[in-house]
Length: 69
Image 1 (tube, rainbow, N blue to C red):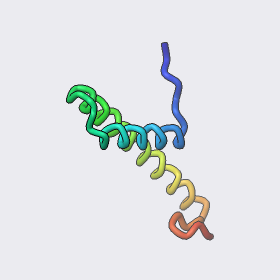
Image 2 (image 1 turned 60 degrees about the vertical axis):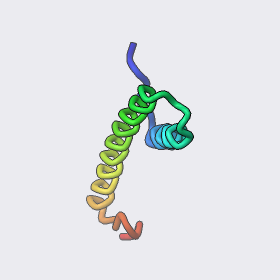
Image 3 (image 1 turned 120 degrees about the vertical axis):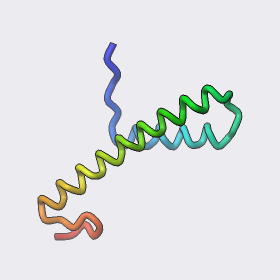
Image 4 (image 1 turned 60 degrees about the horizontal axis):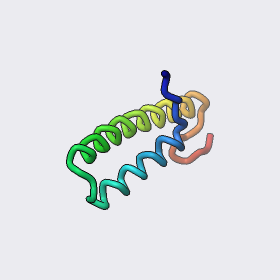
């Protein structure tokens, strides 16, 4: 069974959920480690998507920081 590909927003929401769960400190160590690994994977994917979006903006002559041409 193939996993559904999450949107950028869904990945960000999941990462926020992971942070909240980890901050509560109520999980067993094994679950905390699993969440950490999932969070690291999401961070990597989110950074890659942001980099790709910035590159696309630059190719279109838009300043990624300012949002202007």
